[in-house]
Image (tube, rainbow, N blue to C red):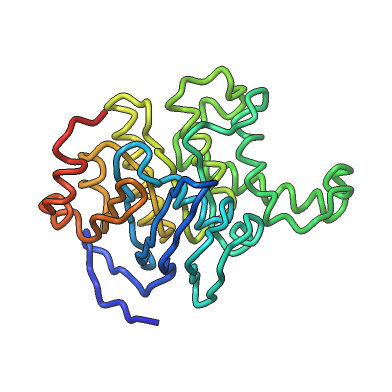
Length: 269
């Protein structure tokens, strides 16, 4: 594996943990991704940008196993495979949030975040339901970790509130909390700031950087706000019509003429 001696934003960027090699994905006759390759390094914040329909969400879905590409390979932590399965991705430390919020609207913030612990709970479902013996001790330990996440995300005041009653920005923060509850080593964020106002975007940017810095979590995110992308990213990959047209440091991408012509030269929300 390639060695790391890279610095970005004052932090050390580690070795390659994810290599996407020549990935192509089609649905029927429509090609969503065409020969895409890039690398993600330990402790990196990598942003995938591009116009709507560029294939960004499809790329995340390939990484964590929701979509299976017809061509290409994924290498994660030294293991190469043609496709990943979602439960394998979760077990190997890859967590995901979605473009459309996928929370349990009738459940509280606390209970929603608790569901993120399911992949690392050792007790069987029967023991969990009975809440006795080892299962009770395990639940208490998981609940303590969830309370730490709630404190970290500054959402103590809504811990018992049903998430369906929360404003959009806070729901996105709860979804981030649920992903963090799985203690991922890599976090995939699909438009974590979509629909937010400036203040909410600033808060979410701060939390993403804190997750990256304090937990050491590697982050791959899709984001349309170029100000946010340039501020928080160590590396940027640009897709357009399912093809990669840019790959580099934020300043390199910002000055790439192909990227300017396809994306940065037009207005974005």
